[in-house]
Image 1 (cartoon, helix red, strand yellow):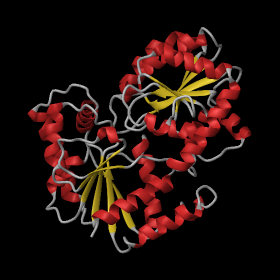
Image 2: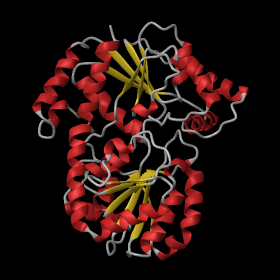
Image 3: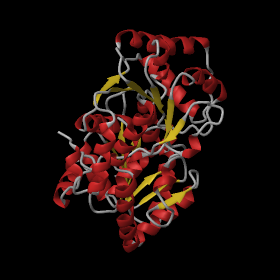
Length: 402
């Protein structure tokens, strides 16, 4: 059972004492989180640890999952894409189905808590189904820099009822939204199976069981197979790296129940990679085992993240924590985590040659990679662990909950 006392050797005692002090003001309060999936993706991973720790420090905290149909999740994925800048044809029938699913869920999900925290656009309209008697917080985990105007105007009608909006980067603050907005960076749990330290022999066992040969350097992207993660662009980068260094590419991917594009993107990416797959140069590994993902991130010589848009990207945080050098896109919340040239490299998202150049540089300079990895781990320890996230949530709740 996860407990705050488990973190004593990882973060300073002062940090833990501050968390306990912030929790005192919330004793006897009931908090509930609502999102759309219990597995697959960073939001579910965060909530799994955060909810347990909130309960551990004395705050009764629940977690509800929105029930939706496949058609609903098609709609909300289009909302996700449109909030990150894609175009959307916002039909009246689309709005009706979105509101119907939220409304139906609202009729049997009893959210009579002291505060309701809603995550991302899927359950955003739940607030419409309630006679509001407590603070509601919308926690948005995606990039809101350039949302589609029609969709934003539609969703803003619900957001006006919220007491607080929380985003992952200052770049996502919206001047046209007259609601209090707060910055809270996401974080990882260093004690869960995906992030805990593993013996080298254990890492090698998982790598071999996954069918990953160990005779060449491995470069890896860990992510959903999603258009915003640009897996086809990753293949283009690999081709250029391969011309200079004999290596392999691993796509460590997962699928989530609220992401209907995953299977389509897998098919498209695999088709483009097939020639290299047949040669054994590109491998697709399902990341449905946290210890396997942990092992792949540790075994890889370089982790890349060639995202076109990114809310924050916890897979970057995970790799940094493991001391693996990261080459990532200079978008969204990634620059918050990486100082270019210090604890990793930042590259413009469409700069295939730039990605390849930095990866080759790290593969040819192992001492540089090791130095960057050490700095990376300490930055995560200082800024992006779940204890800091818990403290931020408690600080916010003390301000919002009466």
